[in-house]
Amino acid sequence: MDSVRTKRSIKDYLPTRRRLIQLYAALLHNANLKGYISGQIFTGNTKYLCAPGLNCYSCPGAVGACPLGALQNALASSGSRTPSYVLGILLLFGLILGRTICGYLCPFGLVQELLHKIPTPKIKKNRVTHALTYLKYVILAVFVVAIPLWYISQHIPMPGFCKYICPAGTFGGAIGLLANPANEDKLSMLNILFTRKFVILAVVFAACVFLYRPFCRFLCPLGAIYGFFAKVNVVGVKVEETRCTRCGLCVGQCKMDIRRVGDHECIHCGECVDVCPTGAIALRAGKRTLREKKTENAKPGAGRYVAWALALAVLIGVLVYFNGPWSGEETAPTDAAAPAVDESVPVGPEAGQRGPDFTATLYGGGTFDLADTRGRVTVINFWATWCTPCVNELPYFEKLHQNYPDDVAVIAVHSDLVTDDVDAYLANFDYTIPFALDDSGVVAAYGGSTMLPQTIVLDQNGVVTYNQVGSVTYEVLESLVTPLLEG
Image (tube, rainbow, N blue to C red):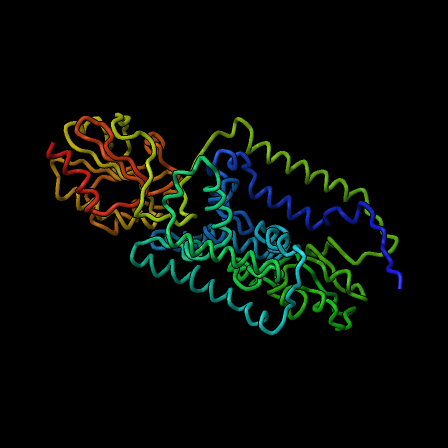
């Protein structure tokens, strides 16, 4: 029997409309393209805004915050403020788009789909995959909600999912940064936690080859949140019940573990639209139809071309805005790589160089002038309330201050990237060391702000004797200070 080979036109090789939207969304999430070249993280004003999809804040290209990371950080700060913004933005995304975000706008969803295109035998959905879909709700409850709330009761910020699981953070944040030669000195900070997260990433990527979107289906707590809005979201696939014959072709066609079209597992990709024999399914935004079953003579109207032209113009405009010479070179601290905090790397002014003077505004009023500390050893700590290793080591600086009140000056400078309510946080403790906000570029002056925490030691003449990124113990601090006092 002769095989029949169907002739394919160039149109068959072009990306679908959904794929174009996914590519556009991935670029918009990561519009800071120059970050991949410089190895630095963008910290402009848009970084305070939550993007809809799962895209690590610490990715070199990210221009917004990940809603899942923002939720964990908000819960970790819930002792001092109400997480109104994060809860509000998740409610807005959920009500308008729901899991349509997963199907069209999530960059990590696109990565999974591209890996699934690798030609191998595929595992179809079954009873086991159906059961595994509930795992993401367990992860949401434990790692996104319970762990941050439990640790904040001890005044320790802990974004459990980001720290222990998130493969998007490992891929975009840690690997995205550490793959750049500019960050080669940070490789020594990696520890067993990063190794475990890398293994999780490798397992997820390998599973993507054989399973359709395994992370979305089984592990993603952000998808679980959006799934709560399945019955009310405005944009998504809708079924006209009067035309539905209950044939089951839509559920059979779907690669996700749905029980019915539009339920909490549905990502509204629209693949079910064309298989419906009665045309009962359509992708709609309210009463407006965005996609319906194709007819043989259907031709795209001029409005569709105008829409794509406008979308392309917006994409180009955004990319130019974030990558033009006016956008500046900014960096930000990141915990995405889960670095080993008991190892350190040199940054900024090296030993033997004079440390630049500065004047910093203190929390509670007053200023700290480095020039006034001449004649004493000075220890500077760069920290942040949202940095777990930072808050864990603050008692060591307080102890040093208590044990050497006349000979050692200690100051803790908080990053100005995300300040939270530092005064409310410090009110939980009896620290006597001065705390300052980095409102005069102190961190940048000493070569920091890429990783936290960071410690600098200056001798009695203001000369740097130690400048390292990474956590310290009290024993380490004392060993750095006592030789200078004895000399």
